[in-house]
Length: 227
Length: 303
Figure (tube, rainbow over the protein chains, first blue to last red):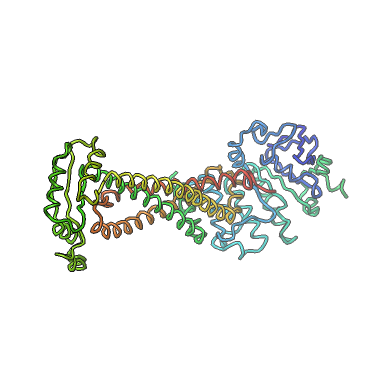
């Protein structure tokens, strides 16, 4: 699903964010990305979503070589991805239903498709009773579930979650990752950036650690090594 | 497709309502710009119509000295008729002239001139003289001026020159005023839309993250500009129609020329105003969203 071959990224101010990174993520995998602030995690995600282009190396997402991707083709690449943000990024004046429907309208779905799909996605994240609520009426955990529902509504092949539990109560964090786990079991590849070691330990998945722009660890027993 | 268009149109209208103060300011400036443009065009059309009337007349009015005895006036008339280029020379006694003025003013306003008839009549006797050959116009006029008893000549070539000068002034002045107002309109419309854009940057951000094309992001803002433009066009043509109608009905009784009727122009005027409004609105929208997508909102998923 994702292939990084000797990828480096140097910003115009001279900052080297990634150094010669090579990584392969298979379709259907669940990968935790860990590392301190400034390690290069954001650049890694930006390169996958094509918000930034690599200075050197090759990136393949799905069947697309990102270095050959035209600017006008980027939106279509992003349609195969779902994104979940730490700060939820829900539109406060829209209801839960409209927040999710909005993501479908954007990619040109018809009203009929929206009416059919949104309730189904809401039931997946167990928020069918909150469809007409506004984000401010929901808890942090519920808001993040709406964010997750929005990311899933267009049926993405790859789900990128940037610290999805960062603004959520620790006990609810497990619920969120559990949901991501269930989504992954349905075949969606999941990349999750996190700082919470407890989650990484608990879910026993592949962990990629980035430090100073390089991958310093990539294993399934990362927590044992880290302990 | 229709669903999409309905959605984008609704979004554009929603933008206007949620940002109504700035939208109102945009409408105000665009209405002023369109109104002034229309006023300048109508003024120019009237000047042209007046010039055609003057050119078509092919005659001058020769005014006699005040208090000139009728016999001397007749003698002067005979001398005018003797000139080469004279096709017709008709005597207009001052009593007939004042009656004509009273007729032009209408029954109500003519009462102010009732004390000016008979011996109190301030108008001089005159001749309405028409020429055979217009190319000898200036030469003939100067010959008439030399005849004893002739006080002045109402020389329409002077009026035509003055009207041309006035038309040029209005066209040049109008051009610059309209150009400046157009730029101001574009600036205000694009800034109005920019304010909407900043207030909706989270939505744009989410749109970009789920794979919206730049055109999908642009359309609601272009719709916003077009709707502002259409409202402005309709309001401006309505105001111009009313103001021009009132003004011409007031002026018809006191001008020598027939003013251009706005009724025959109203459909094309409204159409042009609506098109111009659309153009300005869409351009304002395109400028601001273009700048935004290039800089702040380019590809921001913003991790």
